[in-house]
Amino acid sequence: MDLMINGQRRALDPKRVPDDMPLLWVLRDELGLTGTKFGCGVAACGACTVQVDGQPMRACVTPVSSAQGKAVRTIEALGTDDKPHALQQAWIEHQVPQCGYCQSGMLMAAEALLRAKPNPTDADIDAAITNLCRCGTYPRVRAAIHSAAKALRGGKA
Ligand code: FES
Ligand code: FES
Image (cartoon, rainbow, N blue to C red; front, side, top):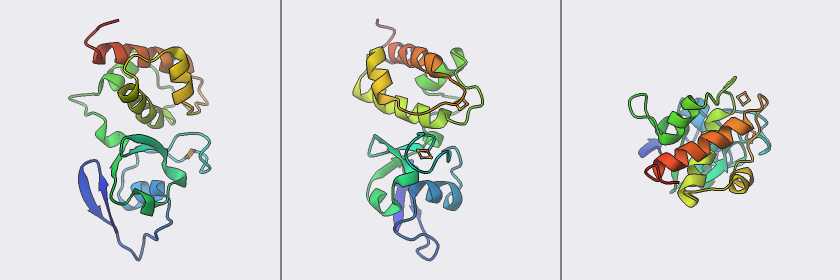
């Protein structure tokens, strides 16, 4: 089996990776992409959110076989230190992360939201970002999403 991860085809060892292994295990333990976090393991918290063909997915309950032939995107491909994504820039400006554990999942969910809705309302954000944050960063997440959305629209209100 192989997977397309962040634009690169990665071969997986079938002796180590059964079809039903959660995608999160493959990302972290087989491919070393540890930016995606394990929180609950039961699709409740969103810490493991990645994108599969552009849609946010909870990797802890996504069998790796279901991602075969699709484009998987993780936090490692959202931006770089030199060129952060508008969301990452807004995250810094609003000082969103506290402990930081939930934040990669938040960002991947937020990026999918902004592609679907470039000018989201608070209700859109609340409906799309169902990720849990034990540090209570929700108001800052919401403010940063509005800032990033505005920046991506070229500063238009
Ligand atoms: S670890 Fe996947 S939703 Fe919590
Ligand atoms: S920043 Fe700590 S859990 Fe969200």
